[in-house]
Image (cartoon, rainbow, N blue to C red):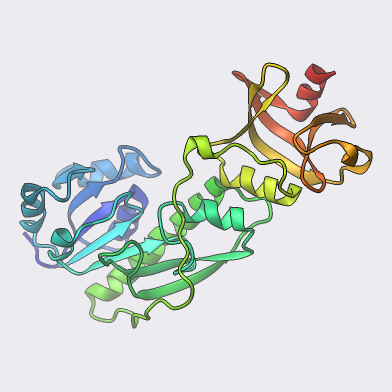
Length: 292
């Protein structure tokens, strides 16, 4: 067994990026059973020890990982905190899709959208005991598109993050890693949004309602109730618009304008673009037909 290989934690794209750079992997700990690139990865690592979401506090699991004798641990979007007994096996690198220390935690892209940030970052950092607390070796800034969802932003940043952490790992293994810089500034957190927290508050301004809907897309999905039966309405995409003469309506009231369904908000309104009513995917125009 090599003393120069990498023990990899996380999604397939990071492992593929390491392999593309000629990095030897001694084992993998998958964070999930799927993920982009899994079909390409599995045939290349079938011969290696592989675990999926093991109990990293189990001494037997720690001993099994330690027996692989990695020189470096690389974690790319592994969904759980890696505890100290594992970190003691070898130095570690992690990648996180936010401008640390802003939005540490499991849902940085959702909170970036919800906050209306115009830019964010991908940070490669040292693995540390605390969640996303490690010193930063590389910080690459990225603009946030005006209509991005949490899902599209996460996919874009995670793809780039896989490449960046692989680059830093190669440098680290060659003894020329970038200088690590401690995180500075206000620490903010990005917890996962629970499904029951995704109900839209239409007393908020329309711009904030739009951000909330995009932050909850694709998971857990922003929702509200509509009609006398308060039927579940999932909102996949909305657009802030001028409410015009409909400003007299109270927030949360649906109305039809230009043959498209809208909902009045705290200041203006949102046009409903894509939604699900019950089990049916609809456009705002189709919902308008049902409301009339």
